[in-house]
Image 1 (cartoon, helix red, strand yellow):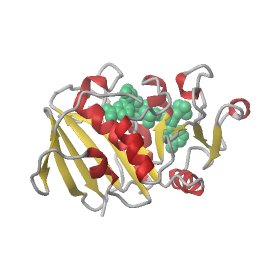
Image 2 (spheres, rainbow, N blue to C red):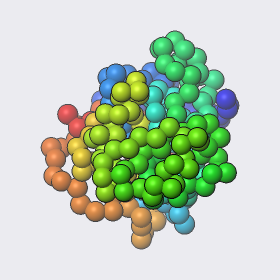
Image 3 (cartoon, protein in one colour):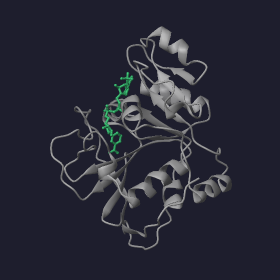
Image 4 (cartoon, rainbow, N blue to C red):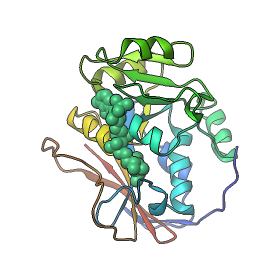
Length: 243
Ligand SMILES: NC(=O)c1ccc[n+]([C@@H]2O[C@H](COP(=O)([O-])OP(=O)(O)OC[C@H]3O[C@@H](n4cnc5c(N)ncnc54)[C@H](OP(=O)(O)O)[C@@H]3O)[C@@H](O)[C@H]2O)c1
C-alpha cells in the first residue's frame, strides 16, 4: 500500500462540484465493463522518449490508482508492460478499504497481452502471478515456459482476439476490465468494439511527433458521450462512454 500527496479534484461537468471522491466517481459503473484509461498531451501523444510519466503528475497518478482501485483486472499490452516496467498492482489504503466495502478481490491481477511472449522471467511482472493473454501463434516453447509463472489465456489464432480474451477473463470472474493500453492494444480493443468507456487524461503540454493514442484508423462508431469532466491540478480527466 502506498500513500500519495492528495490533489483536490473538481468536477466541471455534467454539474460543478468540489472535492470529488475518485473511488466513488469511478466505482459508479456496471458490473461488466471494459474501460480504457490513458493519458495524452494536448496533441494526442502518449509517450515522451518512450515513457508516459512526463504526461502524468500527482493528480494523474491518483486517478490512475483510483481506476485500478475499482477494477477486477488490469489489461495491458506487452509493449507497455516492457517499456514501463510493469509489476503487481499496488493499492492505496483508501482503495483497499473501498474494495473490502464493495466485495472486491484484494488486488486486481495484471493481464498482459502478447503474441511473441518475450517477457523476461526475472521482471517485476512476475513478482505476483500475472495472467498472460496470448494466441495460438505464440511460440510453443515460450508458452510452456510460462506455465509455472503465469495463468495463460489463449484467445485467437494469429493475434489475440480481444472479444474472446474478455470472455475468458469474465469466466474467471474478472468482469470489470481496466485496459491501460498501449496504443496497439487500445486499437485492437476499439476495433473489436469492446470498449465501453474511455477515461482520458489530458496533460497541458504539446509534444509533437508521436506515438499517438491510436496507431491506425479504427472503424467509425457512434459518437462518444461525455460522462464527466474533472479537473485536478492543471490536468483534465474526461470520461467518455460509448453508449
Ligand atoms: N500515456 C499513456 O497513458 C500510455 C499508456 C500505455 C502505454 N503508453 C506508451 O505507449 C508505448 C507502447 O506502445 P505500444 O503500442 O507498443 O504498446 P502496447 O499496445 O502495450 O504493446 C504492443 C504489444 O502488445 C501486444 N499486443 C497488443 N495487441 C495485441 C493483440 N491483439 N494480439 C497479440 N498481441 C498484442 C504485442 O506484444 P508482443 O510484441 O509481445 O507480441 C504488441 O507488440 C510506450 O511508450 C508506453 O509508454 C502510454
